[in-house]
Image (cartoon, rainbow, N blue to C red):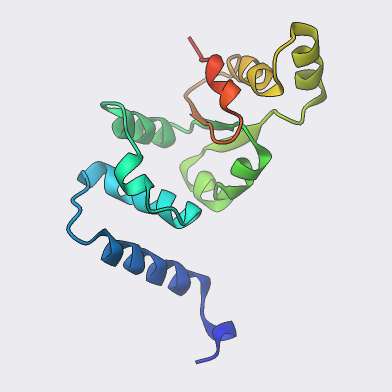
Length: 146
């Protein structure tokens, strides 16, 4: 079979099988397993199997937010683009990243903070359930929705 005839879904399915095989005897909590496997798939970094930690109830709270049509706020446009738009549409959710917004840049400059912090300030004004995905711009963690 030529590689150009392999469907993306088949590649993803095989990737998940490889990850599952690589887990070997490692037992992951059932509610976290699919998330951890997705992180490994996205990053190609198996260290997440041993290092990724979840706050108690985090998975259930995230699922509730997703089922409630939440807004996912990201700290980088690259992370935002990596979130499946068709998947969000099925759930009635949306994704946003404010990092490149002119008002965020102006607020960061005026406040002497980073754009990541200013973008989280802007995100704090969003209505409804919100999930925040922070990756590269760690100063986004200095601001949390209260």
